[in-house]
Image (cartoon, rainbow over all chains, first blue to last red; front, side):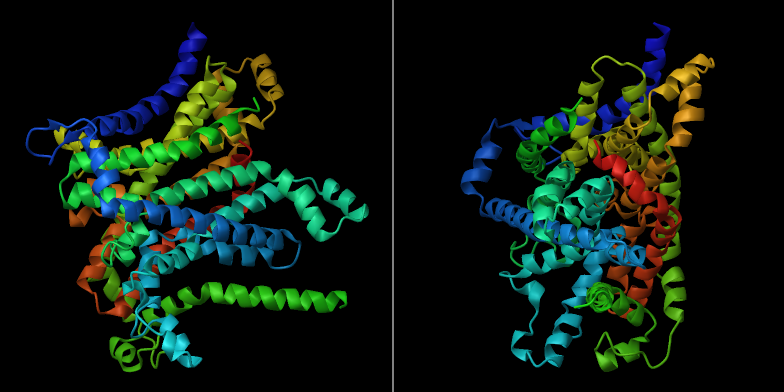
Length: 287
Length: 275
């Protein structure tokens, strides 16, 4: 009994805070999604009306959902692939690799706000680096104010996110590569396995755990993308860069539509559960 | 191609890619030491400034209130990060070392929190703190940050603790060492790489956090760095030299933390990857 109490005393602070900050608000938010509420007057129960409205009669919600999907695809196809290539290169033993690692990791330490500020200047039509460069190499026809073009604004923000976000998955892959025994690689090399063969048959399967954690964290982060859009375009022009997170914020704090905001948040969680549940099952099943 | 030739090519390509990667930063540094008139005369972020103007840094620190925001951020981190490390390492210790029933279930329950969006909690937390008269207090901010950090902390520490052999516990028990002393004197000192990793990750997360802070703290003098930078930007929207200097100042603490802990970082991350 005394042992149990002792064990509980180690667990209690974390569990208590976790329940107050995460679990309880999460449940409350789901409850709010069934109400219409402006935060001041009486709440009005509306059942599933908020959900129905979002899916049948809300163009902006559809844009936001589409943008999140685009963001996930870009992250998986570009960020994760480049991070893996970089990690393979920087896992080789050569002088100065720590310096190179730090260079690619460095932007990850900056806040999205700083990234947003820097890249907004890069895209500035009058003095930004991108347009200056295009002018210098004679491609004046490509010059323009990228962030105010609804067709490409989202992709321009993604470029900034790539600059920031490459370091994190790279570090995960590096850590995964380091846990790999060099004997296996050596043995494969002696057996005459070519580089590509070695990669597909040995490295990728051995990095399975790392792939799962990288893909799960990257997809979840893509679902949550908010800060950088807030700074760079504030979900404009004309809602072209709206995401679920920005739309949730706008509904709640700009239009005082707390019920609708909670509905968007709940939908985000439901979508994310499709990634979270398999991931959690995978990462705990080996016990 | 011979070996030396390949090596040279390897370095050349890698260095070019790395240089491109650093360009935004170079632009930032060049703008920070440029005077405003120089900036508008050239309208080219990569031209070398005619005269280095250090006063941008001084002005950002005082006129831009940046010193204040930095102080707020450092204080928040210095309270939040050690508390977070303590609470989540204790939790992971209980889950891996104390034979708790359903420890796997509890872990899954905690892990899910890492993935839920902050947005989910914004409205309820806001209501809760205003009902408790805790709006615009550092207590509300730090308490919330600790809550959101528990999942990641438990994940990292649990991964690391599991790699520590159980024989160590048995040897300690034979020497008459209780569970508290096992945690303080044996497990935590062995887990230094995990502590270092959590210090960096938690410091970064706390230092850079924007959304929760913008909702929980609305008083300008209490803002931490990311929101402070937004106010700063609003105030000096056309003074790019000052803004760049401010942005540079805001990343110095993060750089220091990274340099201090980076040696142990990759090792600790390896623990996090092995869930």
